[in-house]
Length: 612
Image: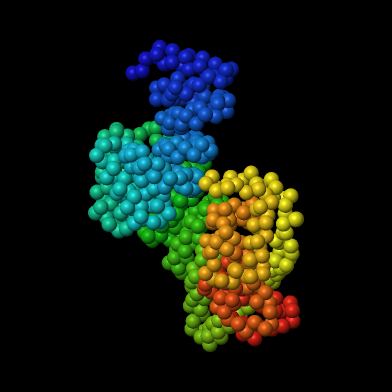
């Protein structure tokens, strides 16, 4: 038993430290962490008003402590929400290990919305724990990944994760961490139809719960075994394990789990044909749900009683109970269950010979099903409705039935054709609109390129002298004489002359070494000259000249019949693929489209258009 005096002293010391933190910004993380395991609720209370006031560098550790305190206090929802805060703050610092630690305390029932909050971090967390060689934490995360895959229906992948988690955790003999892994393995193997393995892991989950003396978890493992036997239609074993599970449920478990067990017992007795026992359990559960004001629970027990009475011949009473169940579930908003029970109601009406009411119930089920299920299921319901309608008048309306069937087929066909036509028209309009917008964008790109190409893109020495003057401080090769701005202007004009007059760029074998040699420079000094004049690199400059040459060839009616291979070679490119790539990078469009647009703008059609 904990020492009350010690707890009081620790609490006082932490409270004093927290007050000092509030006033002076003192770090309390090391002091307050003492209480996380000894007095978690008090730690939570003390830090409630201080989390936002603690310095950011310390807040992350305080949040981690609070999450552990929430977990120790049996408050899984608060632990989950604190984990979100930890991941947001850790993300700002790039602290992947803290992100990973925030997932360790995910326990208990998890909603789909909560799952979406942490699921993206699972792989990151696993990598962080593997990098740090934290084996226990790896096992916990793998178990959580298996749980997520089970919920998403990827059972085979779930088994893979869960088995890896089991292999990591078993040598540590951590029963508390192993329990959910074993329980989920049992569920997964059951879903795969491997009942022997499912039973083995459910029993091992029970053993883990026994070792940590957690009677609620023991009861849950036994219930899993009961459900396993129920899926194999072994009623006696189902009843045995459900009653064993009921025996282990602790008083602190609340009301829902015991009621769920007793409802499952009632279903098991009904399946076994033990009417009296089933009726007694259904009625006990119903009375409890009535006390709690659970409309949905009362509706479900009415359904169970209806199926029980219907199976034992009391069809009239069964119909009344099923009608009340449907009304209750509909009021509670459980539309999926209502749709399923309408089909059970149809069977009861048929047993009673009340075919018109069966048809009406089927019609209601169809209307509801249309909003819940796929078109395939809706069509199946429609066929069932037609079959019920025609069965009632089979003898007297044989010819009418055929006529109605053909009218229905024609009507459905006409509707399908109209829908397909409307969809096709809409798609074509959207496509034309998209194509028009895309063409306008491409034409703007082409126009912009033409302006840049034909404008004063290459400055003269006089126009650039002042602009280049500030650049002469650029670092130049230490082993070569430094150049002043005037010298670099002259050299740049010589470069432009070689390209504009001698068209050196049309030589596919041209290299920076060849150009530098023509100028009497080294390649490094040539690079300095080009950068000083605003050119990024030698390659980009040459590509600009080659693309300009190619664009003019593509615009020229005399070369409109030339293949792209020829245009590429005439422009100085070595092959068509490289030509297309560079052309698109410079102009924004491919060469074939550029030629087509420019020919249309000039009123000249090319003689041999190629694929773009």
